[in-house]
Image 1 (cartoon, one colour):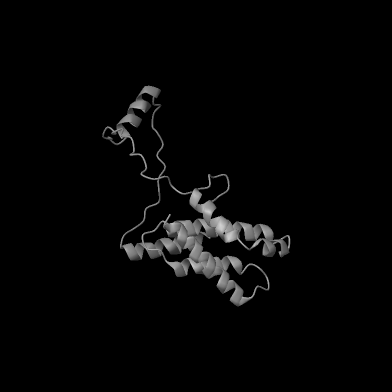
Image 2 (cartoon, rainbow, N blue to C red):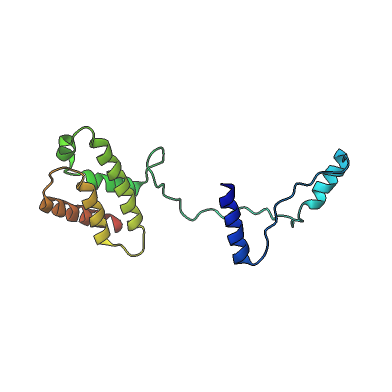
Length: 164
């Protein structure tokens, strides 16, 4: 290991074109009193300009939580979740017990992502449809055409929220 370190140092010396010196530990020659030590520390600190204490401006709109756990749900996210869960109750009940929490969590994350997309200036409907499809694909054995149709219906309803 020591040989490897030497090789690295030599390579660095060649690249930098100079020698790398070993760090030296300085030993004090005499005892230094506490006051002298404090003075040395104070003189070694860089001068800092006095800091200006300003209060940050209040946020223009509240920031949306990225996760629902422990955070306050916004009206948009709740409305989107309600649209997403329409006609899905039978599918949710038929899911295996191990998939139910994953399906619910993915649905909440999808609702938050869709709410963020709706708040943008340019709304990408294709992106909303793809998010809904990805969420519905968690259901095992779902029909591809049913999935496409449900995603488009839900996207249309969600786009209706934007006008309100």
